[in-house]
Image (cartoon, rainbow, N blue to C red; front, side):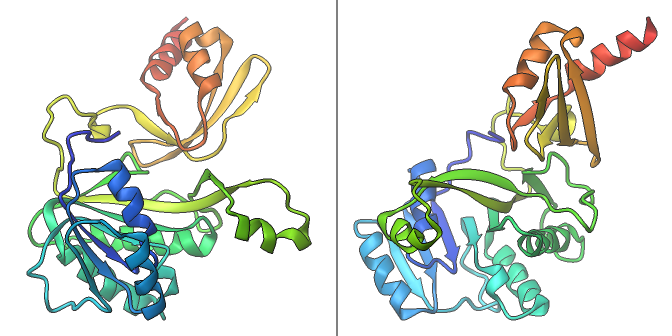
Length: 280
């Protein structure tokens, strides 16, 4: 949604496990034809050999060296792995190393469980990468979920996370029999960060969030009769609650009713309408 022209050809998957993140990457970007898998577990490595059978140019290593940053990749993924590292010091070293392996114009994606601990790991990685002492080549730019590259406005007692409905496999249903779980789906909560090394955009018509009024909905909109409460993180680096009523206009109200947690929402019209109503 940020730049449809981004077509990575190489990917580094840190803590790859059975290779599920690579499956997702290949589905979104069929252009990927070089895969570097970093996974210390022999069991997971053997499983990924089966899962990723037929994938072109796959290299598997147990560890990544912070001193060897000659190999650069268009896409670097760290999914559900940083929180498993021993402490914050090792996490900082790892994030720096992964960033060093990212090509200029490439994108790094960090995903963690949507819990206070998981969000803290993502937020710390975000803060580290935006620190000017970390980057020496080009300035990083947040692509998602934030629509700005300023300090995260989330207070210490709250955390930014989103939800994705996923299908449960038979093994999960069997394991959850004791809890009487019969649904073949569940809502997976996660926190994430997509950050580029410089600007990935090649299309002059791509959406530049920082020059727009786009905001990210950080909670499920509260839809009442005649109005909608929208909680958003704005491109000004602030948290804001907007109340959009039917009287603000048919199109804006309709968009608010159809919006969902995690969506991008253009508050430009709302701001203009709000200013007009205040002048009356």
